[in-house]
Amino acid sequence: ELKVEQNPLFLSMQEGKNYTIYCNYSTTSDRLYWYRQDPGKSLESLFVLLSNGAVKQEGRLMASLDTKARLSTLHITAAVHDLSATYFCAVPTSGTYKYIFGTGTRLKVLA
Amino acid sequence: GAGVSQTPSNKVTEKGKYVELRCDPISGHTALYWYRQSLGQGPEFLIYFQGTGAADDSGLPNDRFFAVRPEGSVSTLKIQRTERGDSAVYLCASSLTWPGGYNEQFFGPGTRLTVL
Image (cartoon, rainbow over all chains, first blue to last red; front, top):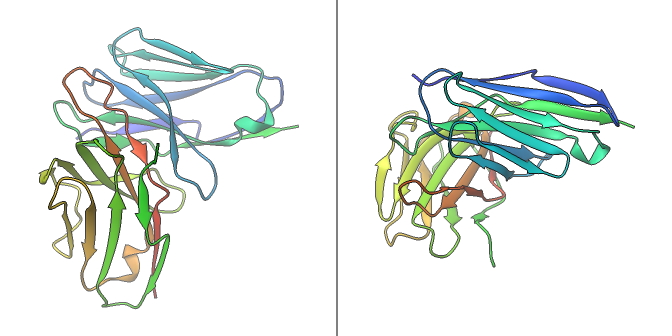
């Protein structure tokens, strides 16, 4: 059974600092998705990582995928308050369209 | 263009009642997903449709839950004999699907179901 774990679960950081969120998954998958969710809102797609070594960047966020290690990272550079949200990674069970989400990382950026 | 829409946005019902939750996907999206999200948790997969058929319903928790998509567009999630534990936000998502493609899911705003 595919399990997806994120850490940390909670992250409080100062503006201007850098940090990395980790997403580990337990079985083989060739793709991974990152989403953002603001309180009381739905999920917004951030990145789609389709292959080993894939790296995507958008603004202060950069995501990478290592399928051999079954690990994805979401790196935050010079955090700003607007990045405060919960971030989820999601992985499809191999050969299916059944997506398993991590428990989320709640990020709070302090001014 | 229009995104995924869900109605109602909020539904309050009493234990034992029947509810229907509706999802309108993005036009042209062949795949449709239902998820359930409890407070402080990630979305939990319920069911996936490809066209009109339920390609994977392994996430439905029991036979009180049923979903349909009769014309390959709008979908309805039906819950019979609701229980307090069914209280959650029910999310719908849609995507295009093709082998090797992004299959990026676009989520609706969700329906918050409260069972009293």
